[in-house]
Image (cartoon, rainbow, N blue to C red):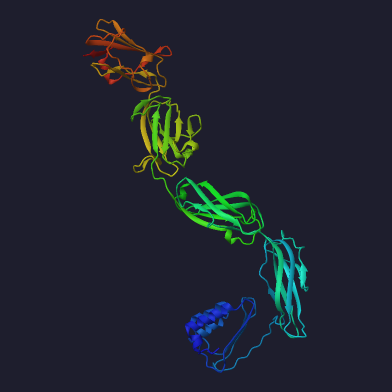
Length: 579
């Protein structure tokens, strides 16, 4: 090397030399030396060249020369890729035109060599091996053999045969153990040092089948689906050989937007020679993470326990992407106490039957998880709501029927608590559908650390009581109904309303069964009295009196006072008919 030559100071040429160093195979010997009769100025060398010598050949002295520490002739010898090799590094003394000499011994294999074939197979059965050669001189001193290595499924090479014969039977090689083989020609000539000239080598064997995905023959796939709907994929696979394959397994990996994998294995019938089969996958694309762009990986005859030997595997693999549109609609929440909707603060039974229903329009993602509905109740004089657990006694969960989602995707919760403390309670319900939507579209509402979508207050009076019964409207012309409030947990089993004229004569009695449903809390009867007496005759205009008799378990029910009691005298109310 001439340190001042433009080849070494030009960046482009320096890169060429760096690439040349890259092309030298590991194990080859490399000698670098300067031309001593030329003055040396290493500081002009391009950095690319210096880095290549230092990093790729381990010649660290070149960096010192580049830095200008020394200007003297230099010799460097090493084996590329072998950092344990005792490299020769010899630096002369200034001036830069002085002479430096060095010598070293190294062992080469120049009188013999080897050549390996590509990997052959896979095979169902091995047949025979044939080869032919010629020498470059006559007479010849060539010594040649061919080694046959078996390669097992763990990719380990095992020497099975070494031969100099031109024709060899290799049926003894078990293809189930060694589906691949590799040939190695070892040639030696210690006199002329010329290699044998290989004319050909051939291996005869029975091939394994070859399956390949072929979407041009058949491919069905929808790349945009609704969240929770079925992902349908159909793709053709064909056997391009005459050799049949056993039952064919296909591996599918669906990766969501967060790269979380879901793996399926689907087994099909056998794939006969020159036959085409349609692979089918039909599976729900469920889960919140499938919103957005997702990918599905397809591998037929997958490597692993389901793999059958075949010629190539790269053409067994495909990957496609699909998008899912999420569910953005809020579910519908409904809450009833003993079969009716209450107003905030209303009195309810001490043993209410609370039914919470959540309905979703999504036809694919069933409301079937107890975590979708959470129920809390805050008791009187308590600051922290209590969460109720699903125990199938106090609270039960009834999921949506997966077979009927197209018509009715509704989950139901039934809560049957027993309240033993009088006072004001608060019910909280937190809900969401399978897509994470909540029934409340308003900003998130919290009670402490509870995020709720529904809240209502209700009052419980554990004693069985009844208020005075009012008729409404009063006065009336055509009909009037009766209004009252019951407390406790049981409705009266005896309930009678007596209507009297101003003389005290009973003109009409209304029995319990005529009033319609009666419940704990506020009541207004379905029954409307039309102002007729016991015989169906219209009563005259005027003032009438009425009283109510109630019993539970044959005991009179306690009267609960209200502000309107002042309109009653000794338990009698007054009504007016005006026509």
